[in-house]
Structure formats: structure tokens, C-alpha cells
Image (tube, rainbow, N blue to C red; front, side, top):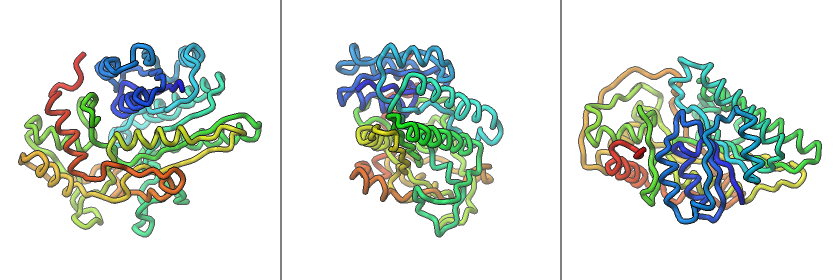
Length: 348
């Protein structure tokens, strides 16, 4: 299959491209390098078969002429859409940036896919679409009826979910072949267990690489933003899934989507199905790395809910999918070892 990966020079997208190539697919990457790195593309080019089955085009998802040309020229059969801004705290202070990129530009991209007749569309969404839930709704299932994001990042992703589901319904009514999946990630962490790829961002916004930077001595301290949440130890609780497992779920969903009649539109939670607090994550990092570092306390950050961890029963029931890397220590170790080996991230 020929699969287009948007944001394929970024953290999750590059890991997805590696897996697709390993499975024998042809991969077409578009990325404007606003968050991604050409070093990730260069790393992917070293893989067996990449010389014939990997193409990279520097292109913005909103450039319909470019996107349509890429889709047609490469005879793309499925799309996995990762390209997005993902710093929920930044989104609170710069919401228009997130609505522009994650919603408006993504709709332009979906319009290009429609013009070409793409039949499989997998969307990288987020648990931030759920918002702050009462304790009785934790762990979160996909059918939670009153999703109300508490930050613009979540709103921008939820808006595209609605657009995609309405589009899928229109395709169904027109009896056109189309299938889509909305995959709501919880907290993605870790690095490629093969050692080829990792997470390169300046500055880092995810907690695991931030903790690894502290363990490596790149930071003189880390700050916990909020220690008075209604959780067992007062710090935020999140569900951490290894990036390789996340990608594995994408492949399983892509392979299972049914395009006949346009009636296959799904949503799945992706996580471990259990929560880990920030304090627990800090202790795990110190245990895995054997390093100590200063931990300071700060005020709550705007847009951060107290509890977010998921119920994964639906994808287990439908596809038999379960994460393979379930140890928090193993997730942290994979990130730490890659960052230790690549102190400056990807080479140019």
C-alpha cells in the first residue's frame, strides 16, 4: 500500500514511517519542517528499501495544489494525518495559531484528499478533546457523552474530528468508498526501540524528555506545575503509551478499515489504560537513570486537567490490539538511551 504520512519528519510521524517501511509499504511524507527535522528523514533513508519506497516532499498541508499533486503522482491509497501543533499550554496563550494549523489547514488538507478520492484517512487526535472529567468517568471511554476541552489545543482537534465525521457521513450517504479512524492519544513517550529515531524538539514540551534532560544534566532542575490537584499525591495523573505501541495501533486500524459504502468511521483511545502521576514519573526516571536532580514546585499551568487515563476495551475488543511495552521504566529507558546517544538530537 502507498501511505501518505503528514508530519513525517516529526516525532510520531517518523516512527510511523519507519514501521510502514518495515512492513513493506511505500511511504510518502509531507512536512513543512515547522516542528519536524530533516535529520529524521535522513535517518529513514538509511532503512532497507527506502531508496525505492520512501519519498519526502517539503510541503504545507494547506497547500492544496502541492498536496493534490503529491497524492496523484504517488497514487496514494491511505493517509495518516499527524501534522499539528501540540503544546496545549502554548495554545492557551496563542489560540489562533492552533485553530489555524490544527483545524483550518487540516480541513484544507482534507479537501485535497476529497478532490483526489482518498479512501482511508487516519487522524491523530488527542485525549485533550475530553477535557476535565468527573472521577466517575475515569478511566475514559470513547463514548463519553459530554466532551468539553479546557484548552484551545483540544478544541482545535475536536473541531477536526467533527469535520471528519461529517465528511464520512456525507460519503456514506453518497455511497462513496471511504473509511476513517480518529485515534485519541493519551501521553506519547519513549523512542524507537531499534535506536534509529527519537524525539528532537527545542524546547521539549513532553514530560519524559524533560525529565531525561534533567537526568543527563542538561537542566539544573525540573518544575512540577501543580501539587494540589485532587489526585492521590496532588500531581497530575496521565496515561503514558510508548510511541512504538502507538504506531502499532495505527497500522492495525489502517489494515482493518473497510471502505465499501463509506460507512466505516471509528474512534479509539490509545493508552495503557492506567494512570501515572508526575511524582511517580519523576521517581521512575531517577530509578532508571541512576541520576538525581532538583525538583521544584510551581503553580498549576492553565489548561491542565487533573486526571486523564483511558479505557482501552474498545480497540482490544475490535482489533485484539494491546500495548506491548507496559512498564513505565522501559518507556523512560528508551527515551533516555536515545537522548544520551544523541545529545544534540538529529544530525542535519
